[in-house]
Image (tube, rainbow, N blue to C red):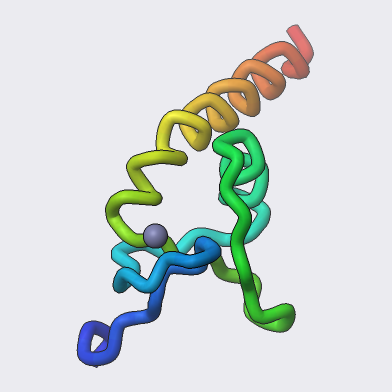
Length: 78
Ligand SMILES: [Zn+2]
């Protein structure tokens, strides 16, 4: 059902079928860090990524998550 018609990658000039979808909140910053521009329908809050582009931003995603975790740990009242 969900696999029949794949979405195309949201990165500019990329027409590869996507393998992942992420929220803009999650992926937007990583994409900016990676220097990739993306196109997204305004009312959909999702970014679709092909395997190659997902690989490219994965390290930035991880970094963002780690920073978030650090922030949370630091913010915890002891
Ligand atoms: Zn792509």
